[in-house]
Image (cartoon, rainbow, N blue to C red; front, side, top):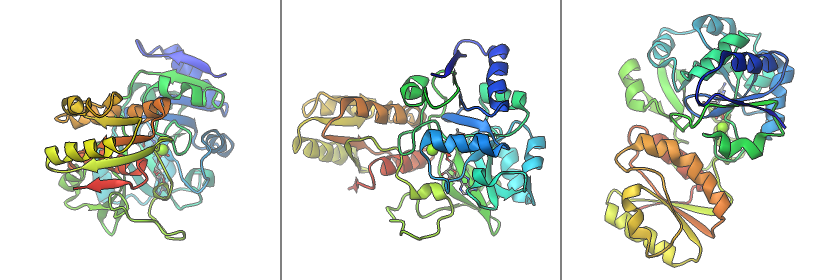
Length: 349
Ligand code: TXA
Ligand code: MG
């Protein structure tokens, strides 16, 4: 059973020091960032990082992000930074933005899955910032969840799953963004989005003048067995509840509601994940409705998605029907996670 540190009300420096000590001595600490919780280890200690893969049940070819607190740490781990990469970091750090850069040799192979690049992020969450500064070394951290499950956005959601697998859990309350960071790699001078997040394509284009969205993000492109992808994380099943899920979207809201009701009528024990405004329409087809926030506030929806997908695992319905959202702004990231949660079972009408 791991040490539980409650930092929800105030960020007690003594507790940060305690967690930092665990990291320095090669242990694992679950900590909050502004996006989702991470399972952290000292990023330059290969033995410590290896424990992350074991705790998560994660394949070792799926690399980790190094979390830094300042530019000095960046210089220690990467080289050949291009001006456009500099501009992007300047614009979006600290924040929910990860950039893939050429690594230096001090970054252990286990962090990068043997690649010559490394993902780097400077988180804005205060606990994360203080923890990294106290450790005085980059922290390697994937999202806090067992591989394949939705990422943890509250400690309640992940406590049982991780309590015996890590040395310490820092509780900082519900994370602010709720979806993992935007992952970008600049190729031939153009930022390619490998994973969408809170930092949108529009924002990146504004800074860099150009942006590409990787085809695997939304197209239900099947990744062939030996196909090379720019980000190994794209290959793996993710965010999926145990129950079968289907995602339904139409620009015409009435059509979407009708389709969802029609599908719900074909099954017993259906759970519907819907926006607050539409919940009442579904009451005639099921009494299991999870409200994920207002359709006019995609930030609220992004915050609640992973908890909603986890709640489904407690209900264990025969079928989960999820309302889609418009793929604009953070809506792109929401739909990317939902399409994957549904294993590409996506109906757009
Ligand atoms: O918001 C976040 O990014 C959270 C918090 C904890 O910071 N972290 C997170 O880590 O989501 P993880 O490991 O769950 O996702 C990292 C993604 C994976 O899809 C991985 O394949 C990709 O980033 N990635 C990491 N290093 C890479 C590299 N060198 N090249 C390409 N993709 C990389
Ligand atoms: Mg993850």
